[in-house]
Image: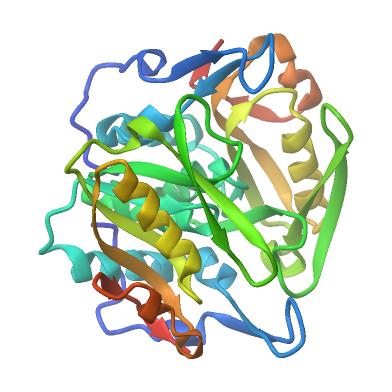
Length: 179
Length: 179
């Protein structure tokens, strides 16, 4: 475990900043940058997520590009599990599988290397934010197409009104902060 | 420090894969994915980088999007320093500064939040790969425009023939593996 100077529950909501009407009118952007800049808060966040998952059998931690790389890598190293990357299209060499998914306007593609997951390996998918759940569901599709087992999803922040959990029904989903 | 099961020097070169002619003819792509998937090798990598920097006074670790986020976050947590993100354009809310820099064909823009660095704070810039040095130099420009002091650059891999060090002259630059 990382050094943890905080024993009581830390209110991460006081550390995360909110930007109304960014990137567009009507959206409140939750900015985790102050959390990343506070090493005690980041340690706390990682440790809390690990508590939520320590009873599960996990082989690999998958981080979703880009901010999922931060939390995914920290969780993976802390648990001493392998880290695998789910990337935007065109960034991974070798044989890959891709999945196309719809985003607000249009579509996006995510990609993973074919040998990232062996058949039957148990994978925890990590990202910073659960919004509509579209990206997370696409990540799970990639893992499952490789024969991997998605143990569940760990997020730091959940935007409740976007109902992302509905898209991830049947999976264990954990979040630390809800808005 | 992370758990470290390897006491002798580990040959990371045997773990990193090479893909000739990717993403285009004549380029050998060095793929760090197997390193990320090997928790002992990743711990070793992070610990070796920290050894190279532990005698320096450092306030913040800056990771360059996207793979620099992985190593930057691990180094920052391990050293219990704050992590700040240097991102591709358009992803950061609030007041930011941007820098435009040339890439092989055309140009790219990187961005940082104005309050990421306070005047006089000492910043170590982290990325996975030193190629031409253009991205790294642009990252340093951003830190310095905010009044920060760039302590140096830590990379995992260095492609010697691209002479990235020349672009970073005057800074301390460390790499673990050279090709």
